[in-house]
Image 1 (cartoon, helix red, strand yellow):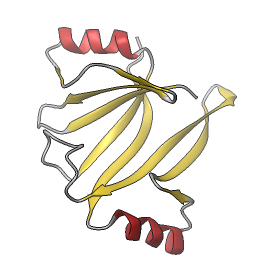
Image 2 (spheres, one colour; image 1 turned 45 degrees about the vertical axis):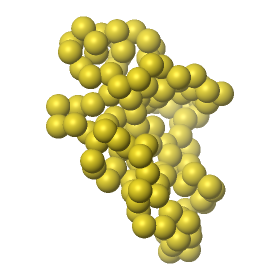
Image 3 (cartoon, rainbow, N blue to C red; image 1 turned 180 degrees about the vertical axis):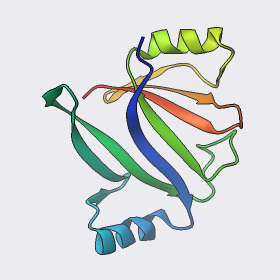
Length: 125
C-alpha cells in the first residue's frame, strides 16, 4: 500500500498573515488568495492529472496546529486515507480526529513521535 505520495501543503504561524501574503506576492511573485498560494504540478506517470501544493500562513494565535506547540504543520498527500488510518492505528500512531470529507478531499490529523501535528490529505484533483 502506498502511504505518502507528496507534500500537499506547508502551513506556518506568523504575526500578520495578510502582510506575509502580500510580501510574498510583491517580492517573490506568489499568486496569493485568502488561504495562501497554490503551486500546481502534474503527477508523475500521468501528465494529464494535475495536483497542487498549498503554501499557507496562519495567524500566530491559531489553535489549528494544536496539540502541537510548533509554529508549522505539514500536509502530506496520501492515497486511500481510510486504509492508511487503519494501518497507522495498528502501528500505534496517535490519530487525533475522524476523517473529514470536503469538496476538495478527505483529511485526518496525526502526531509524530515528537508531538508534531501532521495533516494527511486524500485529494480530489
